[in-house]
Image 1 (cartoon, rainbow, N blue to C red):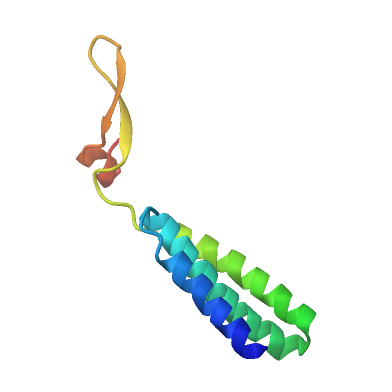
Image 2 (cartoon, one colour; image 1 turned 90 degrees about the horizontal axis):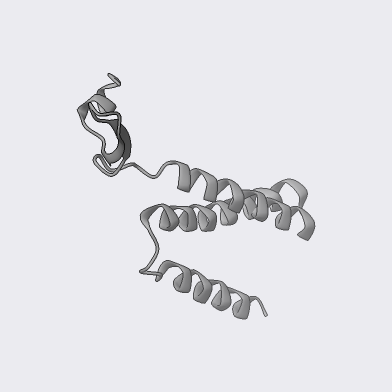
Length: 105
């Protein structure tokens, strides 16, 4: 029975890792959730020693891993959009210039 669970977990991991249509942030969140879930399950089992502790640890680790993976996604310079006002008072959006990156806005 344990062998079948291991195969199912491996298949699920491969299916999630193979998603090509995800953005970089989504990929990092997915990877963080997988790693955090595995680590949380190990910690939960080590602390509680029962199934309930393992499940709680896995869920907590997956949530924390997804949040950290998503939050640590680097922003590419030039993709941020800023609001500007021209000399006639019209407001428009355009890619941010160096003032945004240097903090001189």
